[in-house]
Image (cartoon, rainbow, N blue to C red; front, side, top):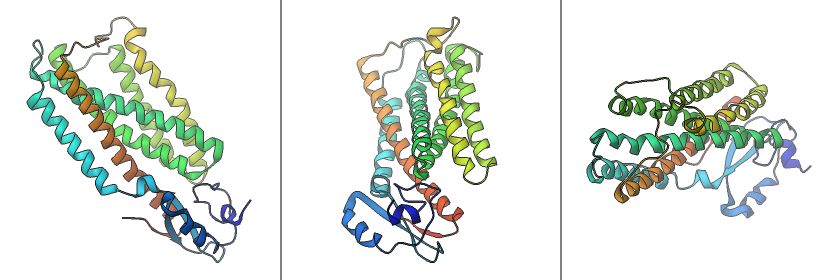
Length: 277
């Protein structure tokens, strides 16, 4: 094992439970790495040396561009949904909520799916960044899940003449929201390295509910959710744009949350972090 992995518990390729002397040789290696990764300088007492950490360049570069793109796409999709998309004959203007509700639901499932994959990666490698990816994705996913639970009743009131009904899709999604909310409660209640392991186990177990939510309309009778929605070509185009917009917005929010997790990692390790702005 080289000296860098022994000394740097925060290195992208290092294990979180390794400690050792400081590293001077990494400076030349970081310069040679070029654009592949951006260094986060963490200055502190780690056996009398300097602790170096690298974070992936794909989320540390172009943050402003990504946010501008995300906001522009969301604004454009909302304009297209409420000003350009045709009004549905039976439900009227309320149907336009689908352009927010459906993309948010899809992004929620993608976010929790990423939590599942990152949790497996953490247990397999013990690299701290996978724990950060899992927690960050889950937290942003909870925001989108909340949007789903808020927008859903607005649509249901017009479609079913009730704000809420305990039909399969609504019930399973509410359970999903509660379970992943519990993920953060448990994570916040555990200190030290055990937090990462417990969180990873939960991130894997809770994934079981995702296919249940997805298939609930087909598996149980009495579901009020339609199995398919009839849309005109223009409606489908707007829905596709909305999907793209909210996915890009998720990526922007996720990388920001991941950056915050890197700062938290540095703070908990008793060193100061200098992250790219």
